[in-house]
Structure formats: structure tokens, C-alpha cells
Length: 440
Image (cartoon, rainbow, N blue to C red; front, side, top):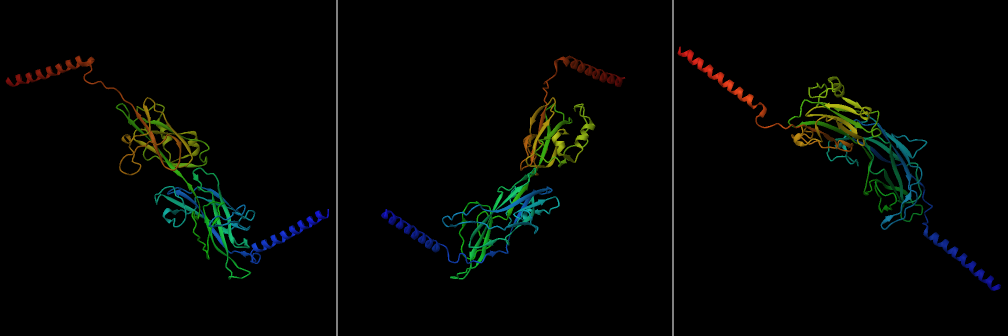
């Protein structure tokens, strides 16, 4: 039993010795000045923008976007050549026009409206704005500024600190959100104290605002740093695009029995739920007629009054499209509905009556030069589909042909022959009578 007691004493001594050694190793691992830094409260503000891109000539819609800033969930270990990343300390505040939400200081909302100033596309500068087309003069953008106030953040050690900024946009027909709803903010805090100074001194070496991976280790930096640290995916903000397109539809009539004066009824319908039911859309009817006059070939049901009521419009409402909006066109006429938001589902139908109907209009049959190159263009877009990011040109080609017999129709040939002999006889006797008269 004494031997067991002695063994227990030896084990206890070993445990105590190990504990002391572990404490010494821990003391050796922790920098002696780690608890000596005075907390750093930055008097810094990081800014980013919210952009709304629209086609030139399009009115800015009423939309809002909300933003939230929060630190990453936990420390990200270092990787080869990269430093570890720590969650950003509490205290970052989002502000719009210098004001924050006292109840939710880590959240902010910006709104756009028709009164906002639009900048030309060529005024982009170094802003990271995403435009829909490569043309340098067909789009404009409105801009709002959001700031991240870091004055309430307290840093106690050097390192890389990370926050994630997330955007949430309200659904609005036609508005295409940013392809990436998050941005990363890394702030680089460094020790700028004199070498060997036990107290040390903290300062901000720079920051990076970029599109990136929330869980990736930070880039390795050295030296005094800069507020413009070079990282891939650098960003100045978030871009939403208000994509509205025109829908042009037309009518061409072909065939030796096709009437160029006949009016056809064409109906445009939009699916409820895919467009703002309180909106309206401009109509360009300059290539058609506001006051059609029914020809004998036109369906008797299409009176002048009915066709005038349908065509004499400068705009139509969303509800009219949902119910189905009628128009009346004859050969070579076209109508354009403007600024329909992307995402709207549409269908165009026609009453072809006794004509053979073909969807679309071939270039050889077209009467419209919509791209301005001097030559008429094919209109072969979908008659049923979804408005996307390009204008749609479509329509109907109606054909009516009849077989015309060649040569003389047999049933009337004898009568034609008799008529010819009668005419010849009259001429013969008339000439003879005149000659006899002269001889007298």
C-alpha cells in the first residue's frame, strides 16, 4: 500500500510539473505586449455606392434596397502566404446621408425615384458599374452613397478584421439585382510602434472593399499599407439594372388575292403577376393608323368606331394588357409598346380569318427598318415569351392566293369571236360607205 501511495505522489508531482511547463510555454507563446496595446478607435468611414442602371430615356422606377453589415462568424485560419482573419469587432454603423437607424445601426435602406438625377454612362469613371450592353451611350445610372462608420469599433491587437455587407432588394418587375449580393470589408490593423517598444501602437494600415469569399484567408500585406490595397474583385458598390424593352409587332399581307386594305385584329396579353398592375406603358402608333377606315375586305364586325377606339392611344395600362389589348393593322403597319419591364410574360395573337397565317415577318416581306441601316429587317421574334434584355420585333405574315386560269376561257370564246367579226364588219362597211361618198 505504501508503494501505491509513493506511486501516486510521483504521478501528482508529474502532473504539477507538466502544468507548470505548459504555463511557461503559454507565456512564451503570448507576446509580452499583447495586453499592452491601447485600444484603437478609428475615426474612419468607409463608403460604397448603390447604382441603378436604366436605358437612356427611361424613367427611374420607385425601388428600395436594404443593406446589413455583420462580422464573420469565427476566425479563419491562416493559409500558405496568407494571414488569418478575425471577426470585425462590434460597433460598425451603416449610414445614409449621414444618418443611421438608431434601432438597427447595422442596417440601412436607400431608395430611388423618378426625381433622381441620371448620369451618362461615359461618366462612370472608376466606378465598378455593370451595364447591360457594350454600347457606351445607350444607358444611364443613378447613384446613392452608403457609409460604414467605424468610429465606434475598438481594435485591441494587430490583424485583419472582416465584415460582410449583404444587400436585399425589394422585388420590382424589370429590376435585375446585382449578380453578387454580398461584399467583403477587410480592415488591416498594424503595430506601428518603435521596435522593442513594450507598449506598441496600433494604426489602420488600409482596407479592402471587394467581391470575394467570406471564408477565405486574407491576402498577406507588409509595410505601412494603403486605403487602396490591391485585391482582385475590388468594388465601389452594388449595381441593379432596370431592364425595360420595347415590343414591336407588325402585319404584312402577301399573295395575289391578299388585300392590302384589309384590317386584322391583333391582341397583346400579359400574364398577371409578372408586371406592376399600377403601371402604364407608352405606345408608338406612328407606323399605323389612329383612325382606321374599314375597307370592303375588312370583317364587318370591325367598325370604324371600334378600330379607332382601339388604335387611338398613346399609352396603355397594365390592366389592359392583362385583359388583352386589341389593335387593328393592315399591310405594312407596325405598333410598338415601349418600356415593358424584363420578366413580363406576353402573348400576341391574331384573327387571320380566311388567310393563311405565318408567324413572323421575313426580311423579303418586311416594311420596317428598325436598326437604321437603310434596309428593311426581318421581324422574327417570339409571339409568346418573356421580356428579357433586348427589344422584340415580331408579327404576322398573312397570305391569300388564287389560281388564275391561263388563255381564253372556253365558255366565252364563241362570244368573243362573234364580237370580233361584228367589229370588223362595222369597220368594213363604214370605210366602204365613206369611199362611195367621195366618188359621188
